Image (cartoon, rainbow, N blue to C red):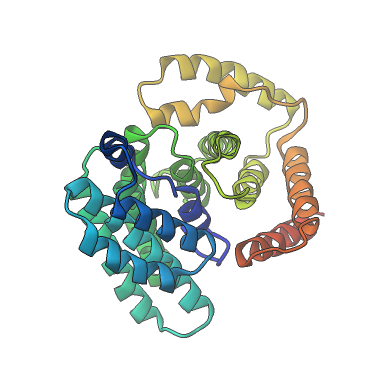
Length: 313
């Protein structure tokens, strides 16, 4: 599992930037933006600009201003997000040890848990619990990641049960299902990974159109390409699989099951999986190379896409 800084959570972090529904209702009822709402907007802007240290400073102000549980929940999950992103930056720069990173990620998990406690019906706390826990397991090592994978999955599922349109949660789940082994060892499944990744991409496109994302998160498309490459279905298998998934989607009882069967709801081009994977990666490279001023995440996305192109040719 990866993000632009080489770890789990940061692209997904930027994708889950929306202010919670409960707080939005509170602000509308008041008729004007509260001091807390203004601070949350500033925190999100700093996060989009990849400035986690400054975001944490504003988070301290937001805690002091917050009075209602829903406000504190909104601050708490952003605290978890900023600590995760800061940890990724510090590990990449080799300014903290892996032990220090694990301690910082445990702290981030506590803030996510606080958001869950204060706003149990909101998705963000559960998502950031999944992302921070997954990252901590990854820092600890492969065996720890495998051991913790079930809990990471369950928290991400809790998120989409509360918000079936949370693109970041499907993005995270798609990586889990692709990277983990299947059978008796774990729950990995390349076909499920493709469905979840397609759902994440389509939801992200909807978010872009609605103005809910600051810019396109290219790793969503790269992750879909990687899942397609691993599934490796030919044209006939894709056609037959889509027909089966149409019925599976109609019979699905949960957001997760609908994610698994998502390909049954969309048009699939008559090409094999690896052909589509190459096309997606080449498109990502073209798009990113055309940008005059790439941020850090986009530079890493471009580097990863180029590596995949070279590996697959």
